[in-house]
Each structure stands twice: as C-alpha cells, then as structure tokens.
View 1: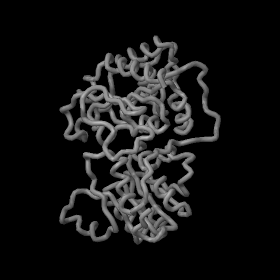
View 2: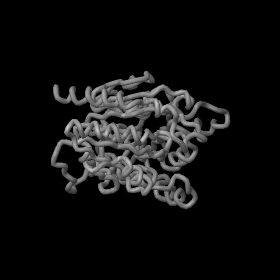
View 3: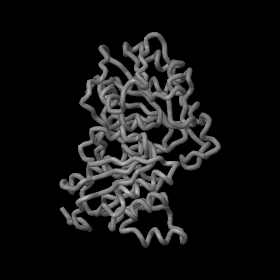
View 4: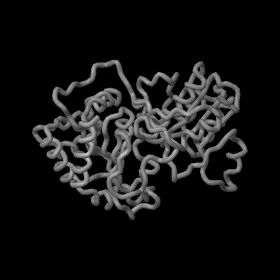
Length: 356
C-alpha cells in the first residue's frame, strides 16, 4: 500500500451539514479513514436532527450537532469545541461555513470545492487538498475522492444505523412503503400509492408504512392506509427502522434519506425518481464498488444489485437540481411514473428474490 500524503492523524474532524441522506453517504469516507488509521479518533459535525442515522456506528468517536440556519450561537459553540483540536479536517460541503470550520479545526484540510472564482482564491490558498463538486458523478464517488487525496484505500460500504434495543417484529412477510419526502416536489400521487399498496397486499404481503413523527406526514400516510396496512411512522427510531427494513421482502419509496438507508441494509429497494438525478443521488447498491455511477438518466426501469430505480422523463428542472420556486409543489414529472411500471418492478424484484 502506498504511503499517505500526511502523517497519520490522531484526531480527525468531518464536516457534513446537509440532510439525512447526505450524512449516511459519508459513512464510506468514515470507514475508509478508520481502516487506514485504526488508532485515530474520528469526530463529526452534522446538522441537528440527523444524528440518528449514525447510531451504533463503531467508527465514530464523537458527534457535534448544530442548526443549519441559525449560525450565530450554534457556530460559536461549534468553533469553541473544535478550533485547533484536530490533525486533519475534511468537509463534504462546499459552503463558506464548511471552509471556515475546517480552517479553524486543523492545519491539514481537505474540502469539496465549487468551480473556481477569483473571489474564492482565499479558499484555494487556505486548503491542503480540494475535490471539485462534479454533478456528473455520484455523491459517494465524489466523497471518496477526498480519500484518494490522502492516498489511502477506499471502502465503499455504507454503514446503516444499528441498535441493541428490541425492534418491532412483523409476524408475516411484509413490504415497506416509504411515501413521504422531505420536499414536496418529490411527492407521488396519493391514488397511485393506494393502488400499489393494494397490489402488494394482493401478493400476500403485509404493507408497513414508515416515516417520521411530523403531523403533516402522519396525515398523509393515513390517506394511503387501509384496514390491513400497518403504520410505523413516528413509532421507531432510525436504527430500529433499519432493522425493520432489513427484514422486509422489499421496500418501495421515493428519493429520501430512508431509501439510502434501505439500500445500505441490502433489502431489495424500488426508488422512484422524478426531478432529481439518479446519476448523483440514486441509492448506492450494497456491495457496489465501482467508480462509475450505478444508474443513469435513462427513463424507465434500471436494476443494479439490490436497487431498482424508476426514472421519469423530466424537463421541469435544470440538470436535476430543483428550482426554488417549484420546490413547494409536486413536480409534473412525478406524475409521469405510472403504477404499471411500479407493479412491473415489484414483480421483477420478487421473482429475483425467489431465484436467489
């Protein structure tokens, strides 16, 4: 193995402030660092409310949390806790705040960088190594390019949360439906979900609805449910949800942090994609270890290992990135995903599972 480009760090800080799925998608970076530097202590700085996705992760020493949109108080406390305390700091965010966090935390810094601008020269001069934020590669691949800069081996494994607590048991075979997204532009039609739930039940599968405790989300799921549906939303932690998902026959859901979690467990997963790009944001298949993105922008059904992606034709967003004025409503392209496509994908997944 070639030698790292810096001395073995005793303390490492990783900065990742975005959403739940983003935090899970840095676990290959964490595992790569732990494999290369087993004696090092790895701390994380993440957005408050996302720490549950890291429960039980054996590679992490300490987690700091802060509020993404109230920086004054939270960021002062963060700087106080982390300033000049580390040998190496990495950031998977390209924001100015991420840069300053790494700048103050350690002498050696690796960051994700936006396309070069003269105004950002100070960032480039103040950073040990940089990885361009390339939107044409998967986030897992982009993050692992930070590992390449250290000249240490990659690990592609996503580490789902785990718990020693007893998790709910479902007596019969069951399928999970995760229907509610964090942002409305990913919503699928309620009547479509109702049809898919009935189809799964016709296959003698108990249907379990997962999600968070938010009142709006629970109200939405109640519209989907029928007498035979079991709603687990808000009743289990992310780690308990991970165990529940792992033992399901399959999961059908939209592009959310939970579908990334499901992918990491190895469960057969069907993910519906409309405005977001599967090149960049598809669930990462378990045991997938290639630099090429597992899925493309191709419209229709794509399968790779335990993941099936159904991609709708989309002209409502630029390069898969949402326009802010459209984020508060369902994207037109989500309505282009038809129930027959999802039923076909369910049949293919279950047939593949029977042959395994």
